Image (cartoon, rainbow, N blue to C red):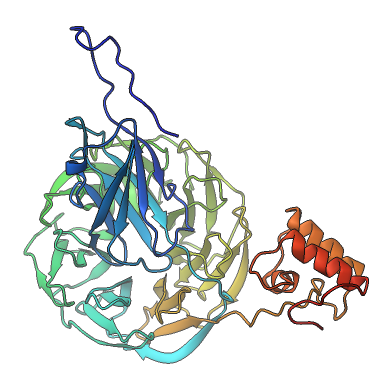
Length: 534
């Protein structure tokens, strides 16, 4: 849908006022998680954009595992497309800002920010320990994946509680070797990667327990230098989330602290100024950013200990107001945003301390959250990560547990989760999803916080697809197989991977009426057999 501006009075009339330019539609759609790694973006305005205003500095794309992204633009009527110069990583969170420097007839467009994730390839969602490890130097409090040396694979930056920061570089197959070492950061609690100075590589913002926070700049090869910034004083800081909070295209910072949270705005060159202090009665341990109310800016969710969580709504200029909602009145330690029930808005997965159960809170689309009633494990969860581990089109959960084993929770597509794989190691503060071996599915890096080595877990590939028509998988072709494939074509059932393979009788990659007909006649002993006959 596009919109054509209508003047409030005929041109030439002194009361004539054009409708201000605004973003009417974007693609990929906000909060989706099925975009291809080669996707391009489309923005539809209420009038044709000025082509000269379309630059990567005005339409700004931050890819969460890479950097500020360049590309090419094309205009078609009220819409324009942006084709990035590189491929995204599977499961990557992409944040895009249409800044006010995009114009229509010289008039600035109202800034608009949206996020989406890229799809991961189908896999078993079962993970195998590779046996490769990374030394557990100093009790890692956080680990972040990103391509810090611009060679196309995912590296890792560690934040340690009792040692200096470390960078480990990926060889492209999920094996890691030490890169930048002994970064002068102590008592670190959290780290977040992003292109903070706009030079096309991944820098990082770190937060500490008892020391000032700071920023380190990347030289483009994974070598880091301290920017010299002293941010937020020397009190207790627990987490940081990066995002464009004021709509100007650069990455700002929302820091979780004791008794108050800090918002820092970026000058575009990677230097931050404290913009706001948001009060808390107790400790905020986790932060998530996302547009929960659909108004085109990033809001913040603070996971709190000793008081209920708080949802902070953004006015688009990094000014936040408490939503006043009663949210997860437990000792929350972590939060992750994602569309968990497939309705297009951002829901919240909450991890908790004090042997309280993790929970799922669903959004009604306006930023009002309701407890789904699900109770997941009680294992002092330090971190929640989201990703589609089995490639079935929904977001699953990885919980990093300190007083229990890490665990995968599989989503049924409606936001209802069931326990899947349990990992043997306890004492984890950070485990994260990413395609570590370059095969298109999501693997796991598990950073153990008890001095043990970090482990690499690779997602197992799906077995070969066998197309024999036996959709019930009972070893013979019967009327039940014909009925099942007809129900699949009609959308009445959703088959498993093996069932879908069996039903794709002609090997086209899609289950159609032609497959149903082939199986029906095969049951009757008539017509051609399937690609892989029994």
